[in-house]
Image (cartoon, rainbow, N blue to C red; front, side, top):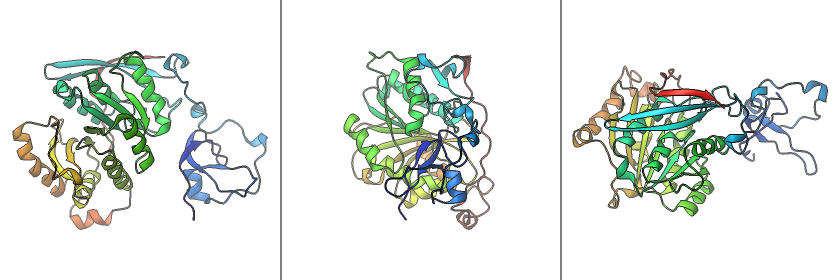
Length: 354
C-alpha cells in the first residue's frame, strides 16, 4: 500500500481543524479527502462514499486551532499569544530573551509551543557559559520550537538556523522577529526539517553549508523517532551534536542503547541540573570518528569528561532509574513509555499577551 504523506489540515471525518493527517488516495477526477491520524487509525484510509451535509459541519471540536497564524507577530490579535522576557543565568553571564509562546493553543496544537521546557532552559544555560567560543560556527537547532538556545548562540555571533516541522515554523519566526531586526546579521534563519526526510536536510545544506554543530533540547521522547532523528542529524554532516535530554522512564536508556547500536560516540554525558532529570549528551556521528575535529565545540571540564563514560554506564544500568533488567526494557520496545510530568521552567520572566 502506498504510504501517505503526513501534513496538517482539517479532518473531514471528525471535523477537527489544523491537525496532523493525510490526504486519502482517491480515484482520478474526485476530490481528495483529508483525514487526521487518529481517524486513520480508527477507520483506515478508505475514502467515504459521500460528504456530510453542511448542517453537520458546526463548530469543530478544536475550534481554537482553526485559524492559521498570521505572517508577522505584529498581526497577531491581542490576547492570542504570550510574550515572556526570559532571563538566562550562567555563571557570570546573563542574557534576556523575549520568548513568544502559545499556551492556549490558539494557533499551534501539540506541546511544542506551550512553554519553555526545562531541557531548553538547561541547554541555554550550558551554551551561555561559553557562548563566545561558538562565535563564527554554523549551528543548526533541531526541534527548535521557540528557538531559545539557538537565538542565544546567534546573539553571540554564531550563524544559526532554527529547524522544526513546517507547522511550527511560524512560532520560530515570531521569536526571531521579537529579538532581532530584519537587518541584524545575527538573526537566525528558519527552515523546515522533518526527521527522516532527506530532502529537508539537503535544502538546509544548500543554504547554510555543512554545520559545525547540531543542538537540540527535549527531542528524545519517543522510540519510534530515534532512527529518523539519528538519520537527519547524520545527514546534516555536523562533526558534533549536543543534546539536552529530559529523563523519561525507559526512553533515555533506550536512546543510549540505540546510539551504541548505531555506532555513535558519546563524548560527554553529564547531569545538567544536578537532580538527574536532564542530561547533556555530547555526540560524534559514526563517520566522524576517524577524522580530526577542525573546530572543537566547548564541552564540560576534564573531570566531567572523565566521568562521562561512567555516567552513561550508570544511566544504562540504573535499575530504579529505568527498569529492573535489560530484558524487561527490551520487551517494552515499540510501546510508548509513560511520561513523567515536567517541572515548571526555572526562568525569571515577566509575562504579557499580544
